Image 1 (spheres, rainbow, N blue to C red):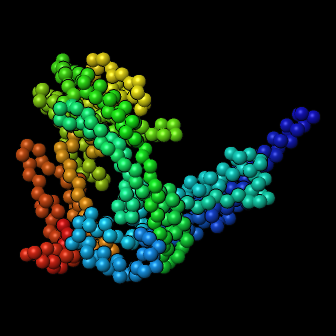
Image 2 (image 1 turned 90 degrees about the horizontal axis):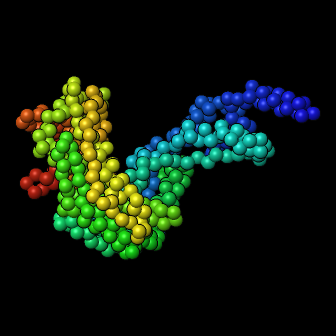
Image 3 (image 1 turned 180 degrees about the horizontal axis):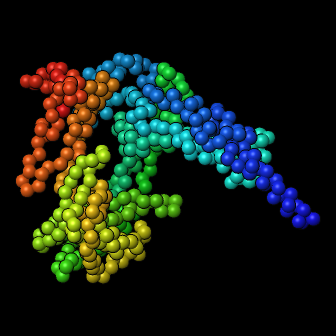
Length: 456
């Protein structure tokens, strides 16, 4: 009997594989699309055809309040924002904002078609015969969802917070130039729930309303994640580490770094821990790496690696001369970070390592690598950086275009070594229509005038 049952089961499985092996089981749908009996490729095409156009040019309007939703004329408000965009600071513009435009393209909204189809294909396979029976009798639906550019959504949410809420500020620490660690007071706040925001955006973008959708933003209570007690435990741990210092050794040279020396390297992040959070200290990799590379250069190892740059295939490539070596600073920093703070979990029982010391080794420079990889491994280092914000509105598309056009032309430009000169104008070229610039406001003798390339 057992043998007969086993043979029957094998036969059923074999027939099922022949009939359904590469197809989605009956009764399975993705959103409004019935994908029963389809191959993965067929299902992807069907889902993309049904939903793809919904994101093309999709936009919605987010109001600061119900009152604004009922009284603000969208076109008039956008025109006013556009008129003021070039004359107000970012902070001034945020203070009295009543309306935000959410565009699918700007937020990086996309339908993860392949992931949805994979989930549909898994029904009845990972869930077993029970899942297959449920699909055949009652149907199983894989809801359509969107994925977003997290940074773009965060920028939108933060902009809304500044107008209708009070951004939360967790307790933190700061380190002065002498290596003394103090607390930075925090406060709770009211902010937009990011999960709810993306859910409303998803619902709106997938709704398919060509005239756009709208909803009212709501700022809810955002309690402190890091309170004074948690910040104090981190402060005490960091102070103990700075009081001990750390030794770095390279090619027989040893640098005994004090708290003053490594104070600029200290950074913190809010990390999840169980059902709560803690303030996690760590070494700022970019800042520490640049300082250590400079120490090594000052010790006479400036020509250990000879590199050159080229722009090709839409990327900056870093090539090292044959036989070049470079100090493995990134690896040493990872070791130092683990040694100094690896055992700190937010509790009060932390003890700093006694006389910590890390040796920096040599590595063979890669023959050719991307710019980002060369930065990460410490083969090259950042010299300096600066970030600024500009106010923007629905009517300043030409100015925004010019700013990004100029940035695109400057990005990945290369300056020659040994005293080579880099020129903004020479690299960017003429600000004319032939070079891709548009007419926008420019300040001429203190007055706004239209000019090709305005905004740069």
